[in-house]
Image 1 (cartoon, rainbow, N blue to C red):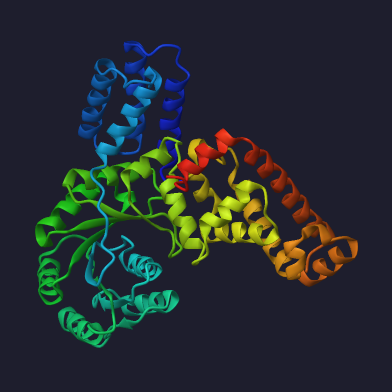
Image 2: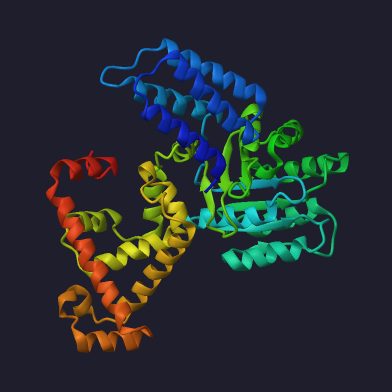
Length: 443
């Protein structure tokens, strides 16, 4: 998970509040110290930690809970709100025709992020293209070309010149009619040297970009602050993209540094795959850290993974207990398209899958993939009426799927167990109504 250690520490603090018999000054000071320790270990700026601590303590001791809310719930709500405030206001990136200029230092993941950004816009139905404006780093042209091929978007570059402005101008002329989103990669440096600033200004002048994104490695921690300030002063960045947020204990420093500068974080990279790229929403991010899940992001990923199918219709059939293997196939297809189960689990409220170990997650994911292969080996009639699958059909299906008979029987056992569980759920009207409302199916 993103910022594992910080999340674990904050969830322990939330648990301490939830299990408290009374909320008094002693407990408030204790949880404030726990939060301070967790944030400092995650490399969050000391000044911001002190400000946050004072605010939480003051509100927890002075504010009265709203009607119908317990003292424990009120203090948890204060912790959540102040952590969200620490990260600043979110900003939605417009899905429209535009030019985006990507900047950053060497080794920050800028070129790879160009591919992730192109993938994001493709999913939104736009036509992105990539322009290789990094004319100084060896093999930068080849790297961006390979990325463009991998994510299947048009590419332009010219490895026979060191004139970045000229290359970008040629690319803009080439794509001005055929592209919706033009993503311009630019050269990085080990530090902000004068020639880099001049080149950036030249590129800015010729591209007239709608967005100027600074790409920063989250592992830089609090060093990200001076870096983002310098780029902001040079070209006026409109947003920040944090990379490698999944693999660093210093991510809190990068998050707080970006907030301190005042430039919004637009996206975060959470893995090596081109789909490991998420819109940054402070509320959902903090909710996940605290173990409360992120239903909004979960629904968005589910809708994307359904590839035009009716996610709501599938969910309703599953919850009614009246579904067959075709519906279960859609469910598994949706889960597969949402990425690793460990990341899906982060979005579930109160860590519904949080107790599963990584090895269990991998085994479950492999099993779901195997189940899909087995269902592909069935006839349409068998998927619609699974009770038809008896011994002779089990053998035929197993041969067709390249699995053992016991694997087919395991699928049928899983299907029947899920159906029974969903029937029990459908009989609990109050539980079903609350969950459907949370999933925004009933409004």
